[in-house]
Length: 627
Image 1: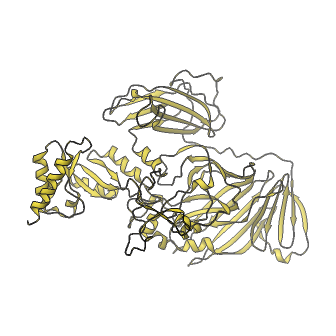
Image 2: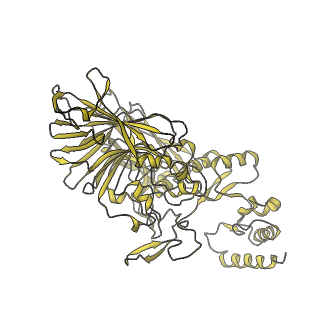
């Protein structure tokens, strides 16, 4: 009770100072101060002095003696499952997350679970992302260059390290790639797109969709072939409406995608006309549809129908060549394959693909390698996923080839002792398949198989197989890494972008063809970590300034990919950006899928189970080709 007067004095001073600010919606009794009678008296003062505003206090969660202190149930970092469980038993107050989806480093995975809940549960009123901006201080590194510093960089002990690097903006106020999903999850309009229509759900409280323009874009295999803009239809707040796509000019030629966007009609103080407020996409593959002659569209409803939604058949036809166009040279150590415009070499000594020349230019700097590891993100450290899955870091660093096989004409794998085959054998073939089996440095011991099938146009079908071994943890990533010279730094891909995205953070990404550079795919987190991943990749190209390089293309299913100037191990070893080495390589990665990044909190919350990579048998296939 001796504290009550000073607590009330503080409350009165705050109210008098801020009562005329239009931005103040709710009075707060404080933060992380447990509970008690004094705080309840403060809340009653707010209600008496200003009955027009609500009162908030989170810490009644820890002290229920004065539950009336807060007009709402407020909790920090509950899971969606916990919110549902609480509201199933308590229906007396609205529920908010005064802090949620902790945005430290590469984070905000699973945020859509919370925003989806606001549509399903009327008592759940949303939450506040912690935090808005990274907190770091400019200083000089040992060489006099400007660098952002965090806890411990000033000789301060104890400290919280980079724990204040939890913003959706960086400390210099530049946007993080996390904003791509934040913007989408917070948009007030859902746009569901099929080949027949766009259905718009207006979740706004006051705004009619007629305040915006509706922009429609049709893409074929990622390339825009038709678009139009018109006034959006009148759909009142809380209501839904449709826009017919009766005259959509389908092509019957590949994967087709329609993007529908609501955009500003006029310039505003905060954005120019055309700024996208909300979007939705629909993707399908059209088979055997009669396509009318294309006509110029005159309004937003000039579209056609006749499609199957979300069915995709890859268009990966290889060029037809004469029979047996490949010249095979099988020596006592190496096996060479020559075709028109390319030369490929497999080494029996190292048990791997060691050379791929396209028109005389070597494109492989190091032998490709399987990779089961990613540079841990802050949430991995917080939940100790780095420790729990460390076996897979060893597997990515250390392996030994224990079997080398060739596929014979009868379709059977034959083990081949390359060192025992003295002399040279030359022959022609229409294709050749080589398989290497590696033991991986895990306990218990595990293994994987890498299979390369060379086909006449110079493409190599690459397959990575793993048979699950009981006793090993979940897998951070299941990928192949191709190391190329840093000259190959131009990146172009057909997949989800333009910014990086992950299994649990990809709703804000769009399907399309995007161009970037490997160096720009590295997000400048205070602590370097996993970055630059893209989901839903159909193909990715990494080239030099002359257009020479490598293309990876899907076999049957889209994959995940990245192209970075640093390896996962280099990113993990660095504590600051200035700890990263000089750039010498481009690391091109194709992945069956990596673990989500998580984000419920950064002090123990795991990645949601549906976004982890289980320790089960796996098969990953894609095509590699020089361009």
